[in-house]
Image (cartoon, rainbow, N blue to C red):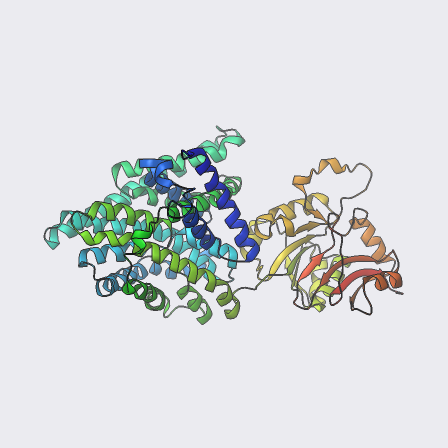
Length: 598
């Protein structure tokens, strides 16, 4: 049967979505599952995905452009305020850290893989790259607190263009050969051209987009398309004048846009986040599908020792060199030392350079299988290690179950206190200073201000928070607060109190996509809950058992009791909603609003 190119393209998308869903469901690194799916579906096993047949000579350029779009999307999230006191650490990581990695990895490749010194230097330069294609998905899964997440995000995005440029300069030195002085001169000239061309293209792209938005020369539905077009244009234009300057241009363009205050770009970023998921899936499946068994057979014991060297020695030494004398905690330094996965950029650059160097150095053929081993090995080890290590170090919580509660009025504070007593973390936020003061007197963690502000995004510590309850008397604020945090908690874990039933309020004014899941029941609006509270109803926690189950509880408290949520012995929370009422089980603690007499 003739191979179907449309079928192969469709399968890449289907496998990408399925692998990422499975990773989320099983709490495994989705990148690892993507690599497995790609290899199994590739020509060496099932033959369902054949990248070279589907894309032909466009494969490497398509991969490179995909990486550029991912770099642009990642750079749009790089707020300078995030770094604060850690700017020096990031600067060292992408300079001193890259240099340490280059030297140690190069020496290791020379000694352990037996590579010619020139090829070893090239491989070491490529291995300085980590990149957003691997770092960002792992950070999204682990969600580390404190400085660790922002430092790794900045390093992963900035090191991509820096490492790629370094690899190009080393490659040019190998190809042209010659004396040391001319080689250094060419390297310096190439670096200068990269900085000038990439910087100019990135700044121009950012300025053009800001002008288009500021002058309202674009309709809203074209904002994301224009941003993508300008980013791709900056990438391609910079590469015309200097090889690999395009990666620098899109990174700089994204950073400029992320830190300017002339035009809003959040709606553009949301579009890019959706595009990121698709691109990462496609890139890793294509990468794995191109691997041939005959190339893997070239790997010897030294390659596995080399992988261990990168993980056990090279990364920890680089982190030690860059963080000594800083205020970073020991836990943060350990986590940074345990996160340096390699991704698509390293694979693409290696494939191109290995092909062009085979005539000069037959050993160049081993570069691709070594790099694939490094990618799979680092993704598997760091991916499986990152979550448990972050939890052990106290930098993240497995299955964060805490509640961000918007509203500090009477029944909201009562619910917050009941949750806290059940060992569920709660953070209460409100613009009403008096209510926040009362919440603090009751021992609750608080934030005085609106959760919708930029200040809240930067200052509120959401460590341990896994959902939001919007409980204010204002339906609009509840809906906006829920949607504002949907990107963080997921739509599954954003909740708001039932819409008001006051005269003049029309539920159709809030279509489904503009509101969160409705808490407790359609009849339990803010006014209805406040009325119950004022009449003496209070929150009561009851541990259910085989002898006293939910039916017995309901019989004792009557139909007027409002089951709110349950907490099991491991701290997992289940919330009562209109679309999914509670089904409390023995062993769970049921928190409900009941008449005080009960």
